[in-house]
Image (cartoon, rainbow, N blue to C red):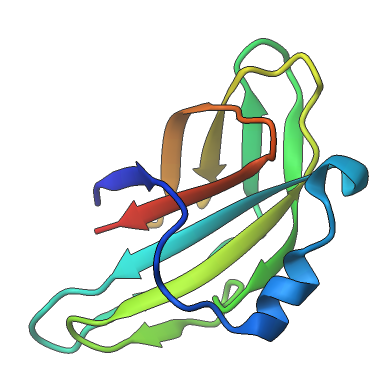
Length: 135
């Protein structure tokens, strides 16, 4: 699976979800990752989920931010079906990173599972809100 960091997508996200996520990440000390997942164009589509053992790892310390909330994706052991050739939007909210953090990794730790989500070398921005395309 390839991952591409993107600017804020032009896709429509449900206004009620945006309102819930509007809490300032700086004040709440949260990091928000928004994803667009592109399903396989043929066949039965895809199944996706996130494990609770998903973390953000600061490059310059042993700090690990924990997953605190998910939107629009199933938590292990459940699955979310994504129909063939469709886009699926989901968001992950993590506890805050240290102020000194400039680069971090997102890693879904799931023993003996294929297709774990992973994004390396994310350059921290001043909003702690990030957008990624998964295909």
